[in-house]
Image (cartoon, rainbow over all chains, first blue to last red; front, side, top):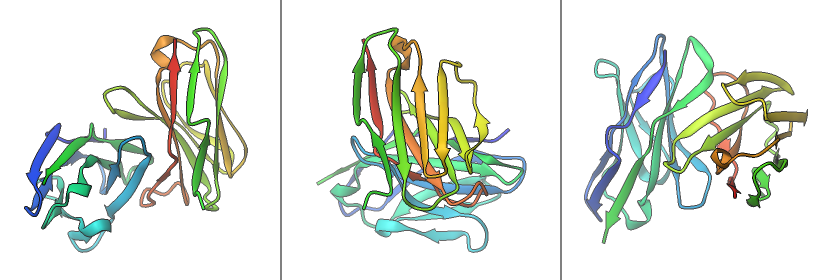
Length: 114
Length: 114
């Protein structure tokens, strides 16, 4: 069965510092991995995805994520955080064997302090 | 131009009533979804349709009935509303059912059952 875990409910970081939001997954086949961001009272917005190829994926707003197959992780990173990055971040996975369903993590609230 | 739109944005109703939420996408996508986000922000798939055909029907009470009149629309009708139905409901769409396609989300409908 496919699953995804976001071990941190909240991540706090000072503006200008690097940020990392963690995600680990479990699938039977190959993983299709996604990051989405949700701003208050808004729908989810797609940030980036890993399907195949280069393990480092670059996305919107300066975010990137690194796929690590041995650690079954897909952590979201940004070199320099902005206050406007404060939002709820969701990792999601689809199993290449069961491609109909996208499973979301429980979300991590990122708080960037000025 | 709004890619995925939902109406209404807010819905407040009494227990036992029947209500509908409408969703439309102008992206030309083949697949549409309904998700439920509870008060703890957990996001769970309810239904997906591909070219008007039901693909995913999670363990959702049969008081919930999706209807897809065409591939640009996916409506959600809820009978005999209960307190536990209070949540934010998101519609989403993707180009096709294949696992590597990202999903585009609507702004959500906040349903409050009194």
